[in-house]
Length: 162
Length: 351
Image 1 (tube, rainbow over the protein chains, first blue to last red):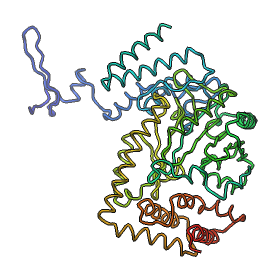
Image 2: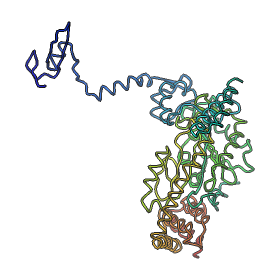
Image 3: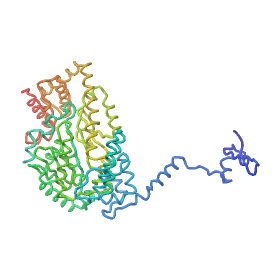
Image 4: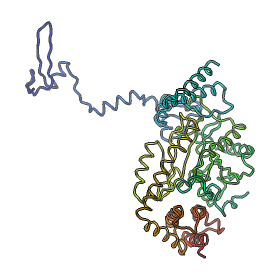
């Protein structure tokens, strides 16, 4: 479809077909005239820039750079520079940015299910024991070991109710 | 027990010939631990670093983790002693090179070393000869429990044992297995093995761990993820799935070399022994290269008057700090080449 712009005669790149009350009208416009008519927005930004802006916005990067820990004083930007955190509280203080980063680095995992210090609250231990059983249940089902899966399911129920 | 006592032989974990020792030199497990209510090291004031080192030194020595424990104040140690500990895999290069109050506790048999004030407040490591992770994890768990009785660890409901670097959170556990893969290197299949390793989310490093290049025939393979699996799961994956792959690849490559080019293998091994028994000056790199070929020859029973234990020990003793400790004086690089050649001739029964 090669046509000239209805308004200025330059090659038309926007082709619009409108049907209003059964009346069909066609418009052929160049990019500039279409933008003037409010039909299209001139895409002056390269696509990579648009994508980058979108990613930055959704990642909330600008805000995370300003995250700071009230306990040790470290900022998220400083952490990114050094690669090491300042104190245990940073894990909570930087959670919005650090959480997704840990998940990526840990192959999608975001919850500890291993050893718990004996000193830690017993609820935490129970919590992790249940998580561990769930992970075992998952592999039992994957291995089609249904007998074991059923036993694990019962134990999880039991622990959750205790 | 003094540091000087360590020099004459290699640690039990290196001298021994544990399971799968034809391919697996040693197994190592380490745990990263930090104290609750304390900043990580980079955010500590100088007096906090001093307090931490003193407190941890006292507690580690009082915990009774082994009948005999040697504590080395790394900040006060000589450059040579630090290097010696790095060569023995008892401390990291980073720990040797830092400049703040720090130390290491080493058990008499050198199978356990606890670094104080490394990247984390505590880095506990257990070493074993060959592929022996099951025993290593049991032992490190026992030591961790002992320490936990007198220390309050930083722990997070979601991230588990929390660490200065977020890549260690969760279990804080890293398994490293040192592999000797000369046949894969010779047949050019080593790249394939590396690609498989990265698919399995494993890191491959050189002989001295983090920051060292994987060169020569020795490679350290370790897990990259520490969160979302139990300690037992991580270890069992290594022991039963990951490491057996490498052992199998290497053994296949050795078998195919023997089948197709047994004369070439004999030639390499016998030339290595001959050179090691004859050299009057030998550099560190050349010695490593020849010892690696000799080790292969011994494991394939092509060289029968040397044993694996002797070769393993020489890898360690032929290094710069060890040579200087053995002779009890500082040596220039050229003097070291001479001392190294003399040591090799003596231990390989040439003189």
